[in-house]
Length: 311
Image 1 (cartoon, rainbow, N blue to C red):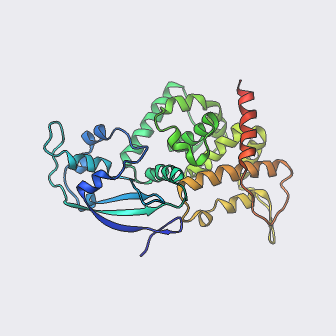
Image 2 (image 1 turned 90 degrees about the vertical axis):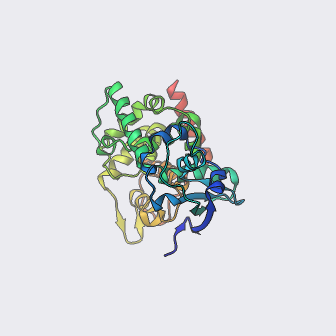
Image 3 (image 1 turned 180 degrees about the vertical axis):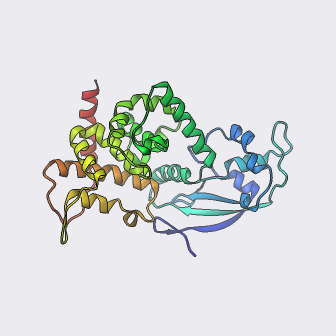
């Protein structure tokens, strides 16, 4: 069965391990040497190790989505201090995801977001452990099951990049790649606490929670009223007409998001949520048309007001 990514067909190619080593590392890959020392799952060979994933930019350049540690270990076998593997393949099968964006600059950001899909489960565990330590330091105990399971790191990173660095949601991960979670957590703790009070359920997406955090910070009580109603399941539908809550719910449904890149999903959730909050505050009128995404000008206006309040 063919696989698709953002409307583009995913394809495979073969490479020698030397060719794979020369493929550009993902811009948010870090600590490859340190990871290599802990990569015990790679010490005993499995055929699955010879399948790797890459992203192809509009100009045809490949960027690794996984396999950084494997490439490092394969290239340095026999060198002092490098763990010994029981087998090194001669070739790898590379599953290639073509860009869904048009410019090379946007492609680098899309590759950074897609990288998260392929990062090792152990990395997610390390992040959860880091968040647990930060929560203890600040004496935080969550009410919402979404925060309790500590899967909010991506939403926190996106919110911090938008609110503090004025990055667009789709470019946020690159902007904060070298920043520690504790800095972001402390900076946005009041917003995190307010979001937690909304009782966000486990299973909510990082895209939705990033939108919740950003709109709570930018639109205050209007956002709080919107999300309280939305998370409670409120909505009105009369024939073809829907209120803002129902329209927003439809626009972020799995059906609407199918095939969309993570890069685009964050952008859509945040910009549509900002417009939805505005429409809800203006009266939540019944409508047929879709919610338009907030313009850059509206984003800039809200950010300017936010920073004035923060001073």
